[in-house]
Length: 285
Ligand SMILES: [Zn+2]
Image (cartoon, rainbow, N blue to C red; front, side):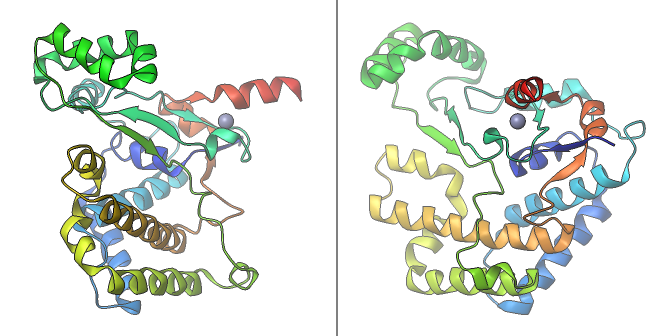
């Protein structure tokens, strides 16, 4: 078996490709809730967050137990249709797997751009093409870009926002040596305590905006949130993602050394391509 690696973002995307049985996802969610309840009575994670964590856990289990021959993919046309409606410039990121666990792309962020709400659904594709062919202008002068897009589509546009996705589990490096040798359960307590502490001190903005973290950039662009609250909610998101990744580690058995590691064959069966950086590294070796 040849080993291959993927980022956590990719693992959660695979969730959208597979038909995941309800019972599997439900029992993963119950397991997550049980772990959280061992540490706090506060409901720090939303239903959506629990669902997406459960999906990563189930996907990891399926990738480890199914053979490339048996793995079932959802109807591809349906997936394409769903993805196309997303109001993002890049809706279909090529799915890649990595040959080296130290590949820089495993830990780098990637950029995406939202499509302004004013663009009607039937113009989304056209806007994507317009954006890509005018990207230079966007980077040089955003105001000029929106003026030109506005006159092209004959609609006044508010500015869209750039989103940086953190796509790696490797961000989650431990802060002290003591923690390195502690068990996964201890790490869960450590990160839950850290998150709860922050929550108690910043309850107001967290309760107001915490469930809408996917809209934060938009809120900021339209001045619906102060910069200070924006930073608080961002930080809250980071603290929660530490909690989430520790819990996922407990439930999947993946850890720093044995990071998202699967067989290459299974990714090939899912239609993935090998990352170009890994490919060129392999040729040099
Ligand atoms: Zn790579």
